[in-house]
Image (tube, rainbow, N blue to C red; front, side, top):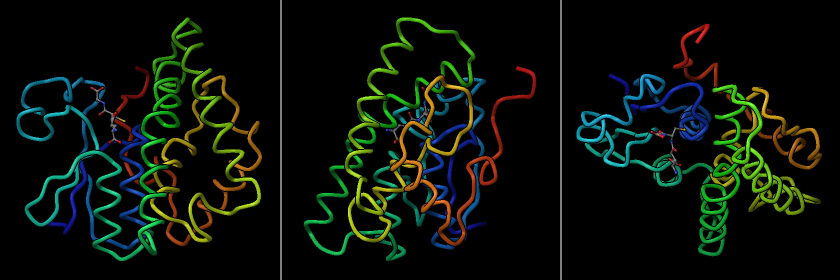
Length: 211
Ligand SMILES: N[C@@H](CCC(=O)N[C@@H](CS)C(=O)NCC(=O)O)C(=O)O
């Protein structure tokens, strides 16, 4: 059995944040696929046995079960000594961006991409609302990245891996990432890290073909 086990699935950018960290740090890990589109996360067995919050990712390691991608990234940074903070100020700055990512950046882009790109729902008041929030969050990150290579330090940290969770999916969201030049350059820098893989090359898709 692999040392680390990750509950996740290919379409999940939140799972990708953890999977990419495991891969970039050369951890011995394996995926426990979550049948997301069969709604297993909404059902009692998953909530009872895997995650009471009803979400992926979940990381199993050393008798621990960790949930929330930000917590998993923080744990892996501590365990591997990679992509973590250099000092207490950096630790807070990383936390600040991970919270912003969860609440505003991935937090609005991910549901927009779910509705438009995966469920293929057309435009609605909901997608319009989410796109507005996503634009606002992307503009903030775009401005922050002007003149710097990574979010917190002159090297990549888990803050970058968190914010990059949904950046590499190509599903049609009606939200062109090419509008954000600094974000595009930053995403290319992360993709150039040794060991980087696209989400669908790290975890199989849960959505059945043709559905
Ligand atoms: N803040 C959480 C978000 C996790 C999350 O929303 N995961 C989605 C998949 S990407 C999920 O499992 N949703 C379950 C559901 O909506 O039933 C994290 O960063 O881990």
